[in-house]
Amino acid sequence: MKSILSIVVSNLRNDEYFQFMSEVDKLVVASTAAALGISDQYTPFKSGLTNVDEVLKVEKGSNQTRLITEADEKRDRIHKGLELQVESNKNHWDEDVVDAALRIGRIIGQYGNLRVLSYNEESSAIGNLVKELTSEANAPSLATIGLTTWVSKLGEANDAFQAIFNDRASEVASRSSGNVRAARLLLDPLYEAMVARVNALAVVNGEAAYADFIDKVNYYVDYYKNTISARKGRTTKEAKTKKSETNG
Image 1 (tube, one colour):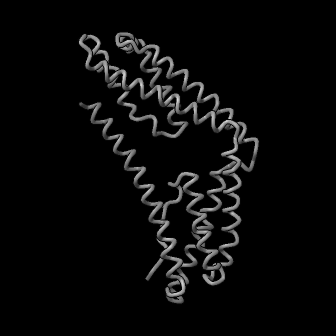
Image 2 (image 1 turned 90 degrees about the vertical axis):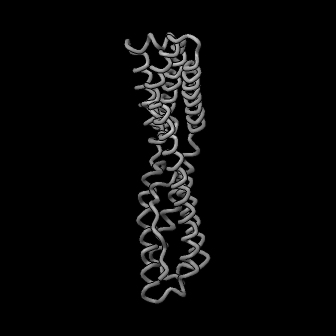
Image 3 (image 1 turned 90 degrees about the horizontal axis):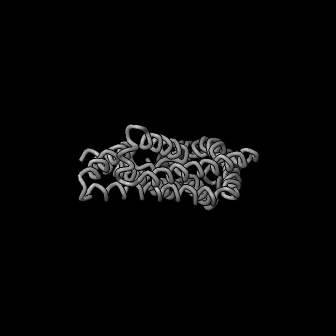
């Protein structure tokens, strides 16, 4: 018996989430809610989808969004540069420099790839990393490999990002419609209710009238589940690679 497959929509990024729900909406319109027997479920779903669209536009329209992206890219670039500088010094001709680079490299490695973390997680991790690298115990090693300024610049870039991020948070908070997460949480059960109704009707009435719709929805379910899996796979691979490099 055909049925619409499940998907953990909370794992989708905002744009992916909206695109997935929009594709489902198009399929309902093409088949018609009446023919699918989901008119009562579709009406609130459509309203919820419209709400998500509106709050996403508010989010994207924030005056601070572009600045946040640029600030995040800058701190990511400095963090990556710091890693490369440390790796380079591990091959230095001076054994004291090599020892210092290995010490600093182990510390950086313990934090993993900060660039794949959420904004808040990355901000916190960079703050802790900078604090640890500039501590009394590690500052001499940092100076030995000539990266004191690099770490200082990473801290400055992180502080600059957080300041812009806080400004954006205040801006969005002042507009009650700009809560994407809340809008998604409202839409999720409406989507599930529609799916449950179609699946139930396919059992009661036979799948013939619903098979085409179910197959097409499942195409998008599979597509976005693969998108989620690929992203998790990349994150896991990067984490394992970093752990291997640290242990090596």
